[in-house]
Length: 315
Image (cartoon, rainbow, N blue to C red; front, side, top):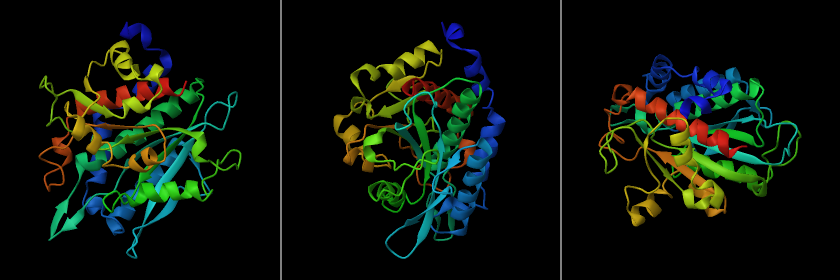
């Protein structure tokens, strides 16, 4: 079944990923040059420049003439969201959008100690960038999709989610415009938000204790006919991850963690939103959260499943 489902464009998209590539990308974001990617720091700026170059290389479109949009923390410091758009098919309505985001900032340096933030959230940033390139690849292959996709690398998540709130402010003020048409992107045109936050660890497995697992929160916000899609893609494409649509089976923790990352502002404004994660671990916000702790084989499988799920959602 998996072989039959794997069309040529999917195979082409998957060739983009390799463990060497993921190692290189994670390594850069966790390097001393980025210095923990603290908000409004030279290291954070280096990370933003790198993401901008990746968006440009992939061929995403600038919104408002630039990939970078300023983020203020309310305390006199400024960072940048990096925003790019992958257009949908010209044969369908251009007024439908989904947002795929991941925050790239982290703690930086505290008390002379560097916090590299490999899982939190270099992993989500790298996943988002590769998803953008994979979906661009199938578009270049000739396969159309019915939605424009806005990719956002959020800054300031560690500053009370300043980046996602700054992005939402652009929408409220009518300052987010489609680079193809020049029309304002209103909240009514955004049908889904996908957030990726801490997706690289295998340290907090589900009840089965398998290391190849993934959590998606917010499934109930989707249309009823889309709520079984993640499990369907997992089986159809032979990925076979251990999946949970709750936070380790706890109703209360599911509700809490669903509101702890950048999807929160979208949820509060009535936009269906999901969070992909591998959970909080003993490495979270520790100095030893380094690229060497990431299981690259499992990381690739998670990216593949998110790719197939998104690709199905935009049909």
